[in-house]
Image (cartoon, one colour):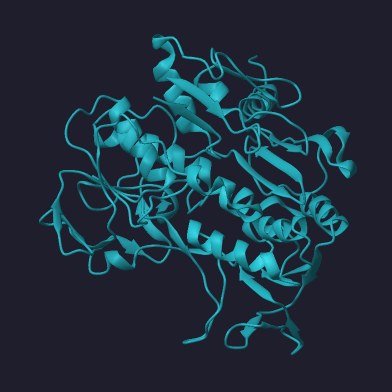
Length: 379
Length: 65
């Protein structure tokens, strides 16, 4: 049984079937219309409604029981999952893929804070952008810059506010500088502040900056990170502050329970919670193999990362963030058409395509080639 | 089974090319080239096509029955 109709959950189900599981298989999802593929939500879906109906995970032909009711509790000793409609489902093996929810800044009872995680979130924001004359985005990480880019595309003047320059935490200072310039050239105003901001108004109508200044806007969107969805696991030993901890096979501390995707936190040398699409897919493959007692076909990590800022795509493979200028530059970074390489001692290169069409597979090959060339030849 | 591509949504990640290189490839401009696009697929290609559809991070590929 898999809980969470996310890319992690859907991939786990597919991998279980592909690896030969022929027994009963249930996928439990909380979203009544089915969980969407999330990457388009902060891009195409904000531009128009034509994509809304084609975002679902392909689950055809898998012979699964699909239960679209939220899970509300778990009894690991009895191996049962409790649902919001009062049902209790028995399982032999359970994979948790319940994802994360947006961190919110609104005070108790304060209405009107916009976030972006689900299809209804994206539809609500899109509708507001239809008439908005100004927007504020809290957070200049991946999601915040994608939302700000959508505002700019739609002609809504937008300001992003964060304690750090755009994408600096994820990508490092050099790439942050390049992408900030692209964003500003597209009319996105970038504001770096030295403390916390607060939402003002009820419904929310603006932000109070650390120096007391209040900025107002028709639309205020919080893109300030996410929190793993573990509340429903209260009372079990599974939920930690950083999510459900798992080992290199995505096993939790509780026998018969695995966790994958945004809800999971890897306790391995490259540990932590990495809430990105490629990572969720990698963990799903490892967990499916482990559930069936098979050796995993790869590691529970995948470092392919992508985003886009103001129409310029960024695709990366290899360790991030990267510091300082790249060791090798092909093309022109300032015009948004370049392939950038950072070399690391004894490991794979970080290869970043900045506005240049190249596939994940070719980036991976380049990154690995860097690792081989940095290994000293045998004596 | 037929493969349908939403080209407005394709971002050129090329994960479909990784799992089904006989059916999908990206040219140097990042444009997706699909074998049998819009036509009935040979039966032996259906499993690979399904894997490619589910590999797409932006759900730009669909397989019709």
